[in-house]
Length: 556
Image (cartoon, rainbow, N blue to C red; front, side, top):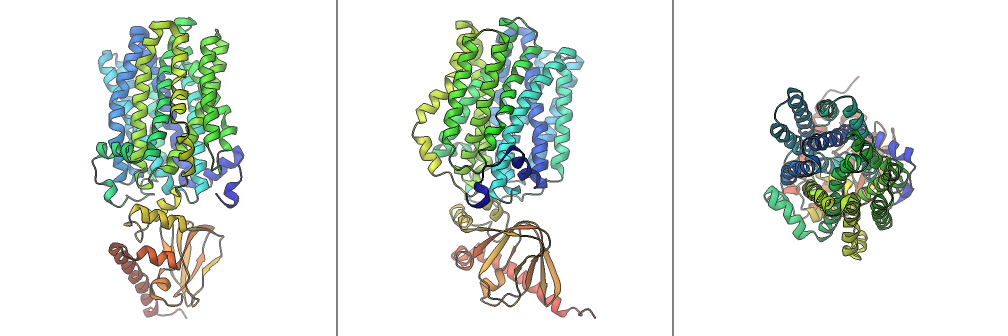
């Protein structure tokens, strides 16, 4: 990463990068409501099940809850490849709000537990669509690569803070109320998330149909595992983490009530300690913005993760448990940000929704395996053995991958933001993915402060400009022709027709552009009839604007 983006950012600077982009800011605020709702409702569900059948029922229920979410996550995410991802994300938040409130109503009404569990399963499915859709949505909102990396880091912080605030808050609510109260507030929070996303529902256009999207949702998702080796290895590694997290949710209830003989609310407090570690790790993850090499923090986080689980098993007492869970939470936050950032870099940009949908589904499977494994391990050797066993899963998988992780990192530089911008433009959207990626690599970022003359009428044309953010005014002979915004391009007439610039282009506000030189621009259009047709239609529309301007009466 070149220029200022290579500078390691402070925590405050990372927030500023995201906050400067209003769309990313609203998306991340909505993500807060999603994470808090998901974690709080999960704690409430496990405590509800534990009260009815101990560690066995809580483990079985947690596993069963995850099965439909694991199965449906890939096809739900694949919808974002055929629809506007903003609308899919909005629908997910609405479903989360409705399903959580339905569970709350059932709990307050005292309906049989089987019906309650059925409603909880629907709630679990509704939460499964958010992360993969957001992973595909964010590149379309970012204007430079640093914004996307900063967004990934902030998302990791949000997840860490949520694992602190949400379980602890759930513990307090359970101490004074009931699981129904937790689900009610979770539903209201997700409704707030839907309100934040509503204005962004059309911010990223529907992807253009291509050969990538022809396969069925499930089979197409599974083809990622078969065809993309690097993405497959990262998905396996990220899934392994969830086996331990799934077991941890159940083990914390057993530790709180079965070992330390405290109330069910302490399961929430133990989960909160895990989240607190993630919050403390923000200084570490802030350093990941602009960092191309991520293997070192990935390996160190795996080592710290393993040490934390061994510590929980080795040192008795509530204080030790809280401290080691905090260490594990910090390791998890660092691991998750590095792993997801690498996956976003290596995965085919056109398949981001599918890749992260597959990851979401497999992580649900991992959570389910961990939830089912926890009571078995407790019965075999008690809570200490269980903590040691699940803590070994992630380092074993990481060691199994070994040198292949280094190979992944050497190739992890796909220009995700630039590709997302090109896919939003009618001129380039129909290009095959390899061609689109090669054009994206040729783009050069150009900052255009307000008042900057980007193109002057009459000069020779040598570049095409794609608008990532801001507004550009088009004028001809001193008269205003049009205003171009994100997703538009300027400069194509001179390049395609070999004539001098037909208009002057000036930045109305501070704008971020990407330039493509004449040769790369023309090569992109060669041999692609659909793109040539789109270019012809675009140029005709631009020339018609100029003809209408010439035929209109001039101002006195």
